Length: 165
Image (cartoon, rainbow, N blue to C red; front, top):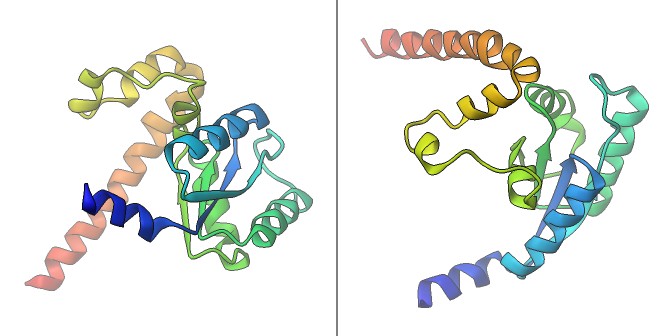
């Protein structure tokens, strides 16, 4: 109990910004954060336009909103790989110590979408039921992008092993 209280005390004053998703989902996140983590301030939210690629003006508005809020943590919940690309392309313009892409976690935390059951999570296939529900949207990510990513990871691991010899 003492550790938990001390740990929460250390988080006091932290400021989070949530970027992505719908206004409704962002409002639900902010409300739940007040209940679950009253010692963390939600200093801002921003629901960008839903489109495949953002225009320069869109990016400038998002960057301005984030920087003016001065968060300690920026949570980005767009779709993969859009959110990762957006972070990479704009990281030098953002004055935030920690930025993370968390995608569907926005919807899970807000309660607007259900996570897969514990069984699928435990066996490391949480993505499979989502894929079966939305194959048209998720096939490219799961069968094109994932193998490419795993290839990059394998290549880096081989490089590390070669350096150790």
